[in-house]
Length: 159
Image (cartoon, rainbow, N blue to C red; front, side, top):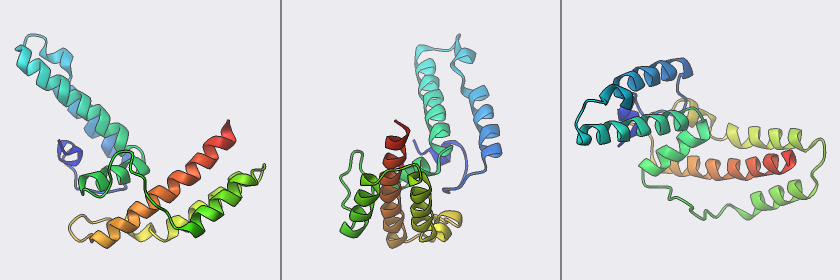
């Protein structure tokens, strides 16, 4: 089940959170299992699946990186637990940053994150599923994995 179709929205990376919440509530009211207590076992099972899909979709759509991941999976360009090879220069920068963690590292990571975002900003903010190219999607995939590396550093700092 395509979550964008489930929510009746065009494929997009940046979604209006207010509208998304409104749509989520409407879908949950329509498909909440409690409203199907008298339905057949088959109907109850279908509603349970749909309700679970609504919850999962809402969770994905609330985070930009999860939405990017989902779109890449829909397009067949990202596999679960994929081992993506990032360029050695990026890995070296991340390794140096990781080795020199300090109180200022969060700021350094934020600057680094902003730099990699700038390269895909227009693609993310103006994502159009009708005109996006495979090259655009591969650029988005590269960004997704770079950002994951930076998130790991921030998580490590929080520990």
